[in-house]
Length: 150
Image 1 (spheres, rainbow, N blue to C red):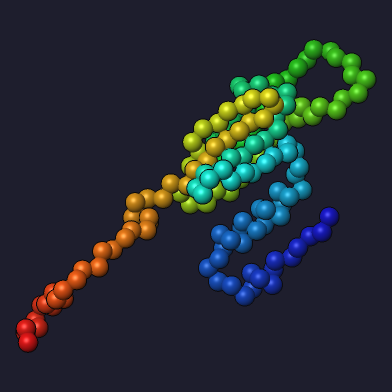
Image 2 (cartoon, rainbow, N blue to C red):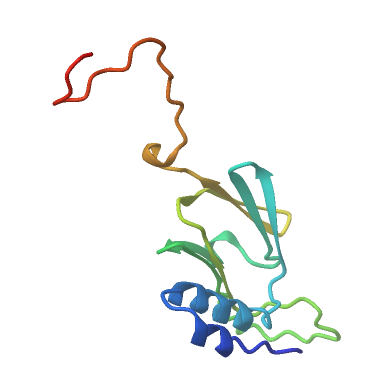
């Protein structure tokens, strides 16, 4: 696997600490491939994350959002029942998968069906950040205080 060294970038930029941390965490998370997942854009401001969680029950999964970080955790209960496998191809190991969310992205729902955990996300911009249309008036401009009418 190839490693990318971002240290020259860090020496030439100031104030981009959050971006540098995101690049470092993305490089570190790239090695972890379990469980596999999809990220889908379902609308202009809507997304869906699907994670393959075959073998996990809903009570063994947890979803948490804290400071723009979506964390999905799967913890299998200890099974002391003696089982003899001839081949074990289904991974039943614990996992933690993290997704960095953009500002104003919120989780709207989560469902599990057919071994896929589906998490719906939506970008909800505050009213102050939404674009608004300014009407253009026709006629005389209003006087500015202190000016005399001509």
